[in-house]
Length: 362
Image (tube, rainbow, N blue to C red):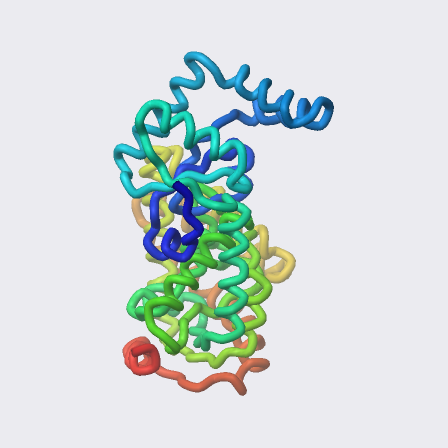
């Protein structure tokens, strides 16, 4: 059994077994695929060397020697158990060749059927790249902009055809936006983005897909070039909020939620230290743009806030957050928006922007 219904696999999040090596998987994978490799990185390297030196037949023989007996039984059992829990799953390798065919045959030998994806990972990614190019050329976009702390990400969640790029990049999109667990690789980020754009495109015909205004980089993940170019020429909707509201929102996200994540993973004391060090490092990362005097001032206020926080009072963080928003982020945002003001089609409060976007995307 073989399939080339890539669209259905991605639109319906069909569970998949990725039989490529762990190293291949770590470089780039699909969110619906679990890594259950036919060969380890070491085994694959040995087979690859054999293929180059002695040809395909010798390489296949070596592969069967390396993955045999108990090792083979363990891997077949892992595939079979996953298929039992996910009866509609598919399997693939790099190009839909020998590795996935071998996995499919070994499963059949123990009475388990599984559909193999024609062309493997390479064909599936090619499908996503081509689909993304079509969407970026043909589908309208609307870009949601606003000062830092305007709760744009939360507003996006109310729009049916929105795609949250920061969630896909696992980063909050500013110098202080680092999140626990790190970011995906560039290829995995692109795969995630292409799939979500494809789903948004399939949901609502020709209505605009709404994206948050992002720079070229979200943390260390770069926007796909075709998407970035489409965003640069798309109309902009600006959400307007008061500084006080933005300070409160930033405090909630970057202090309360961030610390809670660290404590949940590392424990109270170690989690707080990691949280504090990351705040200091984020401030240091923008030292050059802040200038020496302002950096020294803000670092001192941050250190004082952290000391008060350790004693149970977290309110001092509001001080440095307000200064940073007002004196650093706001001027930078205003400068960038001045160059894009001809693309602005609406400005309003969060409620007004929500109503406007709802009318445009339904």
